[in-house]
Length: 240
Ligand code: CMP
Image (cartoon, rainbow, N blue to C red):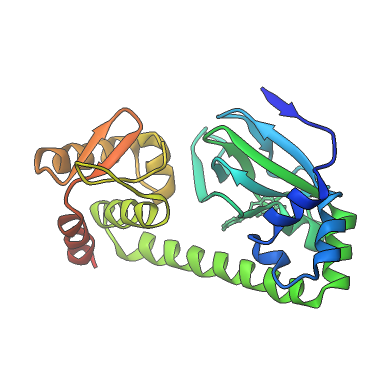
């Protein structure tokens, strides 16, 4: 279920949080404060659809907490996971820039808080604040680089290599050190891991069990802990 809070965010508090978003960096404080009053808080429980591929896009979202899976659903129920977006990431900017329907679907994988910005207010920011145009290019280029990397991995690495690399990347971005090793910091099912690397759930499960036996990872429900980072990096290196 979705909880939508409809009151505009408080200007000063909202302006503070905007400082962390690449899109708004270097923006004069007065403009930031004005922009903050236009943001609408939105809150979604875990596993809630935010929008679907092909929907019309009327606003973009800035994620404040939680995690959102961006994916393309296939007719047979499988899905291709393009990215998992986290705090201060932008979601839904593409449709606002090219006026084409949503390029992918978005679903929360954790309880997620965001603020939304309408197309009109977003386009006004871009026209009044030239640095935002540079920033949006950087966001898009970063995504293109990550997508190129995934395509390269899909063509050149085997399943152990792709899985090792993905676990290390997730841990690098979200990992939390624990007594045992590094909790990768994202609650993902084995099916979701499989969808991220273009493999079957069975293949991912088999590989995780092998690594578990070898004390390279520990898997407990949706929690994956890397016990031996070097061994996992070797799996990736051997696969190249
Ligand atoms: P939009 O096309 O409006 O709706 C889907 C959103 O998913 C898109 O905007 C981007 O914000 C995001 N998105 C699409 N493709 C990718 C990708 N390859 N990597 C990260 N985010 C993406």
